Amino acid sequence: MAPVPLGIRFLTSFTREQCYRTFTLVLTFLLYAAYHLSRKPISIVKSALHMNCSLANEIELYSYKEHLIQAKLLGKPFSNGTWCYWEPFDKSNYKQLLGALDYSFLCAYAVGMYASGIIGERLSIRLYLTFGMLSSGLFTALFGMGYFYNIHDLRYYIFIQVANGLVQTTGWPSVVTCIGNWFGKGRRGLIMGIWNSHTSVGNILGSLIAGRWVSSCWGLSFLVPGIIVAAMGLVCFLFLIEHPHDVKCALTRARKLSKCMNGWDAHKHRCQVYEKSKYNALMASEVKDPERECFLKESDVGVLAKSNGLMTSHVVNVNIDRGNKPAAISFLGALRIPGVVEFSLCLLFAKLVSYTFLFWLPMYLANKEHFDAKKAGDLSTLFDVGGIIGGILAGVISDWTRKRATTCGAMLLLAAPMLYIFSAVGDMGLKTIIVMLIVCGALVNGPYSLITTAVSADLGTHKSLTGNSKALSTVTAIIDGTGSIGAALGPLLAGLISPMGWNNVFYMLMVADGCALLLLFRLILKELRILDPKTNEIEMKEH
Image (cartoon, rainbow, N blue to C red; front, side, top):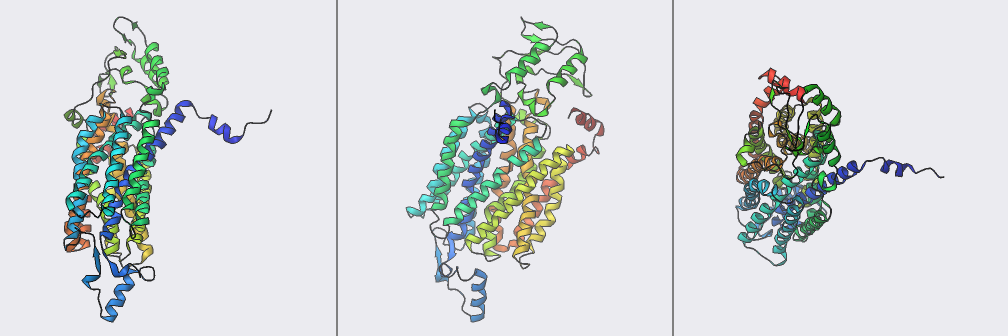
């Protein structure tokens, strides 16, 4: 008999649960990358909506900077008549009009996010995501159709942006809830740090796709991403598995837990544990792998009265009535979870900084550093490359230290001086700009990535919820919705401030970064055992 090939042995070494987990991780990664892919084109196309036509035929021979040098030496600056506009962005306040496009999308996204989490936890995640992706693909394509049908009405583009912002809120609470269902707390920071790189991957792909046609036919910069998002919506409908229970990956452990308890009462449908030592031994043997914690059903987890981190009663009631599903948590109930308010407000300022770069970095590179539209778009992807590195690094550090807030605080502390240096390196050459884009991307997007993934999942499955995973979607929506308020304000403020100088925009970003750090100060002190060290010690033991 021939030996089994190494590749086949490797594939068959995975259990059924691991295969489903991996498949869900990859699929949700691709789904949300498609969402971000469709958001990026507007930032790339901005520089094409208001550009100098005299550069169009000569840009292959000279850079924009060379044109400026020649014009200055010859004393023949470019005439205003050489500018080709796309109405209505032909006015002197075009930056404010472009900022209005960003603001309309992000404001609708922020408002819709609060409702999206509440709606999403009451509907099928698969159907909810499918609807959102098909709708997002439609509205993204409709923006590009404005080019082909020669539409110059600002109200049309504003309406498309508002509608797209609303339907895009279906994505984040749904994919985080799905991942939270499949993965426990053991290596959540690392897993979600790697998984959250879908944001940067989507931005990079969106930049490259939009940049392909930005100088020739910018309508395709929206039409192609719209088709991709819609296609991924169909993939979601056909393949997404919402919960391990749907493929019977959790039933074995649930039965084992319920049957091994002392004192089965068939009339009350509950188990009774009379001896704390036996219960603790059972739980220790049942959940050795922290990644398998999520496979214990909510209905199999009782309410444990605790005092100083220890059980005070020798009787634990565990309701295993399969028909009684836990009720979805209310909005105010989610706000009362410890840490939700602090992290939500911190994300507001962190996302303000991140989304200002997302929507205005190509424009900054084109205006301040004098790169053409395609090169500015390509260079802006380096910020997202840094975001991938920062997200993974933040996840690894927070898993190792068990200090989410402190990890975020350290990166925010380093980000402020890096932003100042970046604003001053314009004349230091292309290589310096590349390095600073990667470093700033890591420090800016690291905390943003950690809060929106691992922290949201931690809070959505907080011990105070006593196993009710229905809170995860609502908590995720509250945190990301609050952050999206900052995401809406950042690009708007950048559009208003940039005419007074790009340095002022960076000062605004540094102030926002400092505010994000201050909002985490209490949680950082608690994690470092400076504030209430006894409570912190108990919480560390529970980990």
